[in-house]
Image 1 (cartoon, chains in turn yellow, red, blue, brown):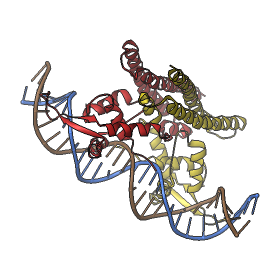
Image 2: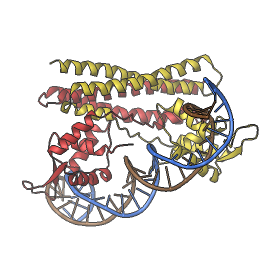
Image 3: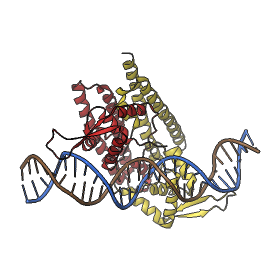
Image 4: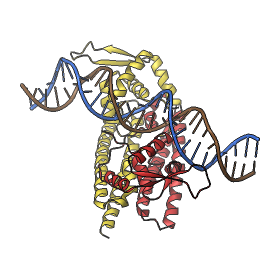
Length: 182
Length: 182
DNA sequence: CGGCGCATGTAACTTGTTACATGATTCC
DNA sequence: GGAATCATGTAACAAGTTACATGCGCCG
């Protein structure tokens, strides 16, 4: 049986500091995007669910002059739910690399088309890798967060994997170039 | 707008040889599993759709004594549809690594729990890597398929990425062991 | 003769995305 | 004043999984 994991990202984030749905989404997009995605269509309803389950509660903005920013806070029950999940066995991830599917059947198309795909792939992930590198530098400089080393471990994962992507891309483009000129 | 990609795996496979739904599923599970997943619930209905669209046609088993094996064959329209897709831009993959999410919040749990998760993660992917290595050896020995080199490129991707997983796992277990003893 | 693998299929469900609506505020 | 961003939300849809049903044939 699969488990709704959106709740745990939310709970995890709120375990560090109070946040609004919008802020959670932004953090995921910037810092988690290389290993996690969420859409508003999942996030907002799940926040409602969590509140109803008593795992989080909302605090209407008071100090703020802005509109209706609804910031959430985690409850003790929320924390224990999060701890429970952390101890549960991890599901194997299911992946779908369209680029590899295309590569697999690439003999059916022109080399140039495939090369363009891989360049695109490389570019996208190079950008992500740069962001990771930046983020790593930032973190290494500021050493005040308590789960600081854990985050660095997560970033390290991304760097290794993305570097592997880059190497593969270069080699595969080379291979295709050679095949083209044959 | 997202695109149903199950059709293209099917078309791609049928572009090489006639296959039944069951056979397609098996090939995906064994050879594609490190970059692609499909369930029967997607596969069988999609075969029906493709047949209705005239991109494939079914051949009821004649030579076979077995039960109702429905083997499919690709049509010229199917081939051109496949070629069209190969030229289209590739969608960025969305990933969800539960293991990294847990690592990120691992300060909230015991080191031993996290270590067990990573050992599990490592074991799973080590198995996959071994299968990839085997498959690569096989392919390097037999050099008769036409898209042989392309497949090797795909396998190479898996090997690089999985090796990165292994390295990261080892280092992260070390890190957690050290943290535990502090 | 029981269990496993072969083989096809689907209904119910969960999960996830997209596209839109709404409106405030900030920045140029 | 218009564009971008902040901010919340949802309905419609698409995608994907799970769990089951059915039954054949082979092997020990």
